[in-house]
Length: 456
Ligand code: UDX
Image 1 (cartoon, helix red, strand yellow):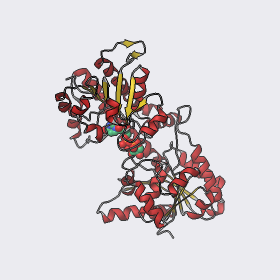
Image 2 (cartoon, helix red, strand yellow):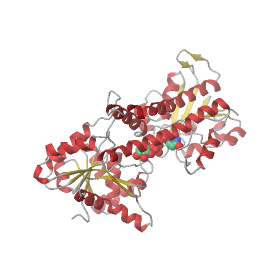
Image 3 (cartoon, helix red, strand yellow):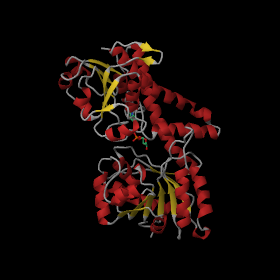
Image 4 (tube, protein in one colour):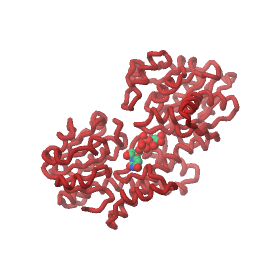
């Protein structure tokens, strides 16, 4: 019944797998669907196909208890669920403009065709505004009309590395439904989250709204976060010109509660599977619906973000006293250690990773690049095969003339500059994430350059 609806999550990528596992942990009967046999076998066997703290344990526990199962069958999925969450990917289109909705279309069409009783289909994937109405039409065309299948929308906001907490303890839930039936069923599908919050003496605010707004919230949130990061990185550029220190500037800004100190860390900028793709998709969709002008600033946000990468290259050339050729700095033959490949710490994800982009740029400028990352090497090798991958931080920096710290892993933040200083060829370091303690490195004899900070 509606008090404990059975849930399915279609698409067991990052989003769907995390939700399926966490909602089983919250006490629901859950089925995760994916057409990919390999993924489903792994998950059924208790193996999470990506790195996310805490998730493996919850997967094994809930598979063992029988509350959580996985399937490659649309029929089994349709039969199982009262509420079906669409969690498939919406990658960037090959032409770079907007989001590719092919996976959403396939998944919704097949699910709708296999349904045999009334159910609610809820969109969670990040989509361009207007998609929910289109999904509703798809369902109308493919499901038996007498079943009265309904569609709702409820975007998610999970961050890699914090995904379990973000799902079980969200800072808000956004729901768009068209009927009271859908609204109370979706509320029942979230009840586990509200119950947990009550036990922990928290509240989870709910924003009820329409389809278009629910879709826009996700793109707006990511656009805001990207803008906040690019804002502080723009200030870093100004600090570089003026001789100011962006880390102190950022701290000072962050003490104003109207501004807030989070997402105000200046450095190499944002990457990952969401922010870069979403702000591009948001601009493309705004253009289509005649609101392109309103989001023109997001283009600038992207440009600021990309300029940080070039800045690292220029700092490298300066530190190594290299000349600039027609295509930029010439680093031929210089041995450079790159510490960090993932787009942020505590993940193995290298999608749109600024660190890996810079590693590629250094290699194209002629440098002999040795990359080390605590978790991301396997993925990095596939994304950027033409550099050397080291087995440890010390291996990477051995004989280097320059060390670039490009992802702020604890292992790098806490590295001993005396120990590293003994194995390098020259003590030059670029702090691409403002994560190193400058006085400690300087007193160990290093020449250090950081983004947005004066040359000292
Ligand atoms: C992001 C959103 O935070 C999340 O709400 C949404 O659902 C998906 O996209 P995620 O991609 O996991 O999550 O990464 P996030 O922690 O937001 O970091 C994004 C990028 O911004 C990283 O490359 C990070 O290094 C960079 N960043 C973040 C900064 O450069 N400075 C900051 O102050 C914060």
